Image: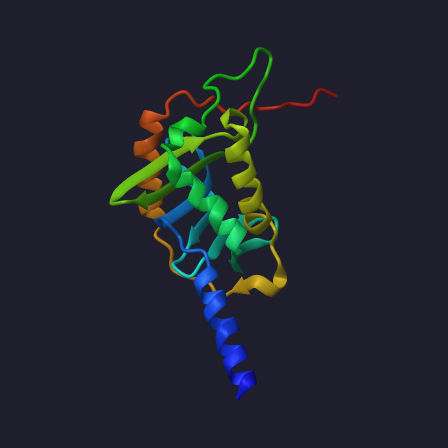
Amino acid sequence: MKKIIFICLVLITSFLNAQNLKFKNFKIADYEITSDGIVEISTHSTVDKKGNIIVYSDSWDGKNFFEYKLSNSEIEKLNSLTERDLEKFVKQKKLNENQFFAGKRKFITFDYKGKNRSLCFIEPFMNEEFAEILKLLGKNIYGHDENAKIPMMSTDFEKTKKDIINREKVDNYLPQKAIIRQIK
């Protein structure tokens, strides 16, 4: 009988201490815009109600889906995004002199208290707090753990692409991708 009570107390305690997501419809994507204005998504990640991050990746190992369980501390850090507008995480809107950017742009969006928040950004423009959140997401998004692979899922990339195009009009300060050429 004592074992049953102990197990029930452990379960109740862990249930009460579990972090709840403050947001809904969380998405983060890596993308590029072609010269024709077409959005190409290379990673597309969502967070479900249970605190799982579902990652689509079109990368070095092909097109794959992965699923990872976020820890309570990771959920707490993600929840910190709701404390202020996403634009407040932007520390600069222009590259430093003689600095170029050859990476991919990123798009983040979620709903909080009935309002949509979104931002198109590049990592060098973001503050340290946001960089920490990207780092914790990055280990899952770019990890490609074979044990976390799941079957291909249907994903509404077209909606994300439309959202990116609309948000790009607001975040129009992002630099063009630099093309780096090697001279032999």
